[in-house]
Structures are given as C-alpha cells and as structure tokens.
Amino acid sequence: MIAQLPGGQVGYDDQGDGLPVVLLHGFPHDRTLWTPQRVALAPRVRCIVPDLRGFGHSSTHGPFSMDQYADDVVALLDWLGIEAAVVCGLSMGGYLAMALWRRHPERVRAFVFCDTKAGADSDEARDRRDALLALAKREGTRAFTEAQLPGMLGKTTRERRPDVVNGVRVMMGRQSVAGITGALQAMRDRPDSRETLGTISVPTLVVVGEDDVLTPISEARAIAESLPAAARVRMEIIAGAGHLPCVERPAATTHALADFLATLADPD
Ligand code: MLT
Image (cartoon, rainbow, N blue to C red; front, side, top):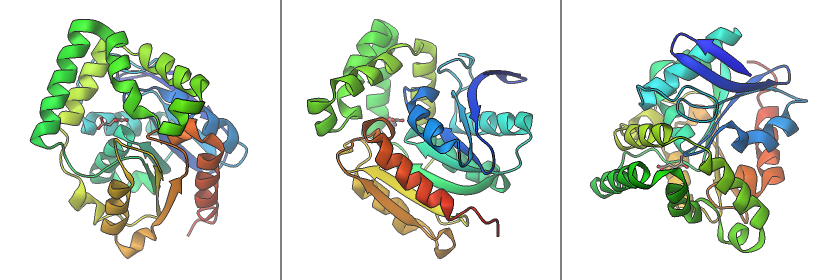
C-alpha cells in the first residue's frame, strides 16, 4: 500500500487486527524483510510494516536522520489513526526506535530491539561509513550489495541456505543509491542512545541471532543490562541465525515475537 503524506510517499503493509505492531527494517533493506512475521502474526495482531524513507516504495528524498525516520513512522501512525504501537526495530530500525522513544514516547506500547546496538559510531566506524558512501556513489547498488552481504547473514545460512542468501541479495540490490547514502549519513551521525535506554518504561524484548557479527550477542546483552526494571526485559537468542534472524530463522523469530506479544495482550 502507498500513503501520500506531507513528508513524502510511504510504502507500507497493514495486515491483521488488534494490537498494532510496527516492524522496522534495517539497512539497506525494505519492508519485505519482515514478510514471514507479518504473515504469521497477522491472525493475532495488526502488523504495520513501512518502507523507511529512501527504501522500497517510499520517497527517496531527504532529509535523512534517525529523528526524521522516527517522525516518518509517527506520521504513518497518525495517518492510520493509531495512538500507540509495539515498535520492533532491527538494527537501523532499532536505532530509529530509540529516537522514537526520545521524541514520541507516548506512541510506544512496548519495544522489540532486534540485532541492534545503542552506542553511536566510533571514529573508525564513521570512517567506514564514509568509505561505503563513496563506494555506493562510485559503483552503485550492486557493488555495494556484494560488499555488505557477507556480514548480514550467519555462517549456517551462508553455507546451507543459498535461497535465503539470494533473497537478501535481491532485496538489497533493488535499493536506490540515494536511499543507501542517506541512511549511511543518518547512521554515521546518529547520537549515542545508551542513556535513552535507561529511561525506557515499557516492556522490552531483545532478540539477537547467535551468529550475528555486525551487532553480536554482547551488544544485545548490553542493551538488556541497561534497561530499567520497568522494561521487564526478556532476551531471546536465535540459534543458527546471523544479523537477520527474521529471514534466516523465520519460524523461531516469529515464535519469540508471538510469545512476547502474548504477554501484552491484556492492556494494563
Ligand atoms: C543494519 O542492518 O541496519 C546495519 O547493519 C546497521 C549498521 O550498519 O549500523
């Protein structure tokens, strides 16, 4: 579906009824990253799955920042008439979920932080972003995809699931250079969210693929340990998955989400 909003066009899926759950993709992905969970969870909850600015069917123009992505999500919720939702963000989607909490905490019913981290980029990481920016501009999406793909997926997936590897390659390969470079700048310049975590007062699930090398288990544990008691944190490690458990181990990831969402079924 397409929403024409004042900030630009937003591609999104909206499936199911009941508790609204917003599923936010990472970089450089689009909303199809969450297709297995949207389909499996829709009989129980309402899944809202947007393409972030610059990706999928959303507008490719800026401004690009975590704050802007967060405001875009809220603009979509407003348009759909949704007051508050469970916000589930993978990697860059998690960075933006933390920005959403800083800017619009009343719109968040609960969090799922999936394969993400709270710290800002180090100087070395910022230099790597700049090198990737130059690569994307110089050589385009295909070369960028081949450079990024190996780190996205776990060893098991790379060795045994060529269909999954190819599906992720196709998804990454259809993103625009404008969206890729905009997101790289937004991630490079994002603030440190570690203090933000200490203010989270809604139930939170932290999910991580056992073999994630981009945002490893240590980052997930650091998030879980920074959350206050009010977040009633739960943590799930998805065996045999790397950075993208939602496509590498879709059933296990759906199961972790479904169990968590069941604990939210009765509004308190
Ligand atoms: C992502 O999957 O969103 C990226 O790996 C995040 C990042 O590059 O920091």
